Length: 74
Image (cartoon, rainbow, N blue to C red; front, side, top):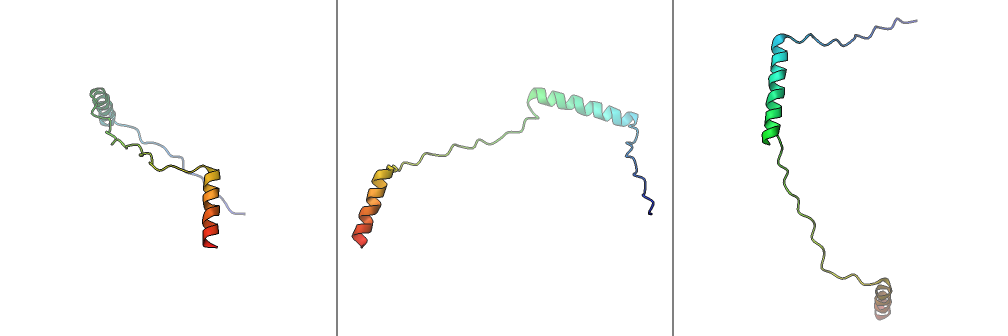
């Protein structure tokens, strides 16, 4: 029987006063930038695909054309 190693518990280090202050300043700067509109990334507009200008034959006409073409070649 083998002994299993204990899992190390992930403990976060205690935040110091400077780290807390930096986080607070960062959050404040982020909210101001969002309010001004600086933080929004500009997305390029993707144009819609153009419709094709060709007309599709209805099924019966297409079959008739195919039948006519096969008679010509035979």
